[in-house]
Length: 295
Ligand SMILES: [Ca+2]
Ligand SMILES: [Ca+2]
Ligand SMILES: [Ca+2]
Image (cartoon, rainbow, N blue to C red; front, side, top):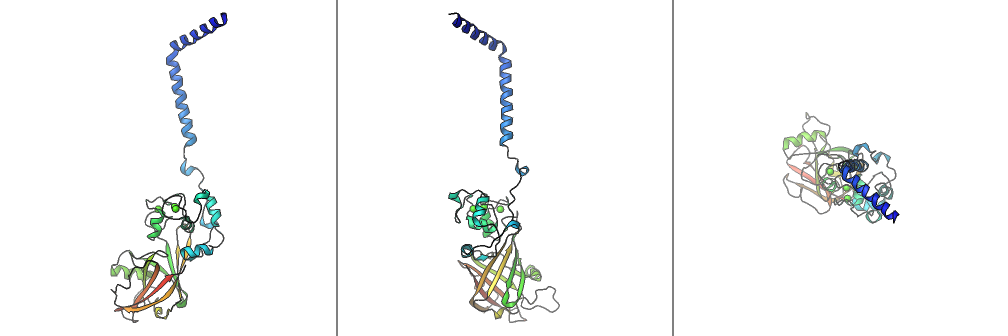
């Protein structure tokens, strides 16, 4: 009995003490909650750039792109980690690590994320508001914010030329003539290297002898190209990733008027249309030669 009475008394004392000190107790509880919340926030805080960034870079790549990739995109000469090492690096779970999987849902399958060195776990690697796929499909650099485009060079071994490609922004004739001083020009609204559709480029076959520029005769031998000759289109992204697309002359060769729709005719497959003024020394007609992407 005395034990029960003792407990009873102790309980009464506790309640009495709570009744007298409830303000202090609530204050202490609140302080505890605040401290707990701050600690929880700090532990779970994403410190963003303060955490060491992953050091994935194209400089550390070794090994050549396998034949399986060449068949998919028609490109070789991409040097980087082996695909499985790359997938491990980004910690892709096994059920999302296959070539055609798309863990970030940007519409760009893993094998293209791998080839372009974009992040397979982020839809918009460079955070410019356009997904990796949108950028690549439309010729933009997926790993450089804004409207940056990859640097492009075109090599035609048969003609012994290697020439920069200028992304012309308008079809204004004077602007294009200005662009032609710096290489061959890519027509706006036509497709980008390696992409489905018709990519149209044009270079000078001749120019006034007093005209400035190093590329005034760059396409003077275009007529010599024959079926099977290769045209290599090399794109270099800001992240250093270089991709070389190989096209082969497909036998289409015509001399047409400058506004002939055959020049810009769209195609389902990736094709390349080369055009230049013809005959040499005039600008009344266009020599048009077409090539297909080799996969
Ligand atoms: Ca993707
Ligand atoms: Ca991505
Ligand atoms: Ca982007």
